Image (cartoon, rainbow, N blue to C red; front, side, top):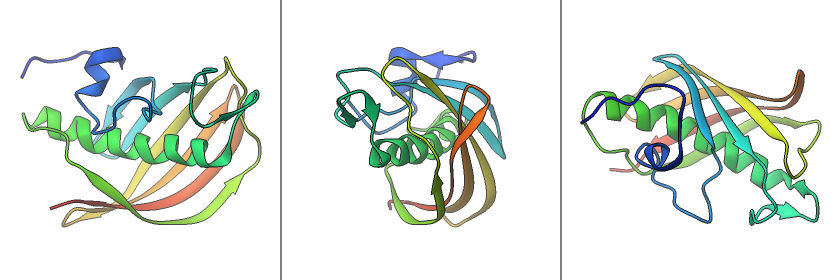
Length: 144
């Protein structure tokens, strides 16, 4: 596979995640290493998770989950493999303080706490400008 340089967006980003429109909830892969990833999402009016002017809670949680999928997908890409399908195993300690509005960009930092046999435990922190608007712990499972 051809190397993609960071940041990654558009069609190249879709190579890294299994999701497709209208459910794509990540806009760019900003930074990556084996234990951490930073992604963005620009809230647009056409998004199915937008309620009048704000992204609803489930949309923010889906963005967080897709950020985890993006970490997994990029790690597979680096190994020359296709992005796997996965599932949310659980969400814990979810704390949503605020919701972004149309036109705003959120930045999410995924920190890998543990990976074992296709199960990944992460902490995710989502910011709008300099303010943390959401945090969660999530467990994801790669489908076999």
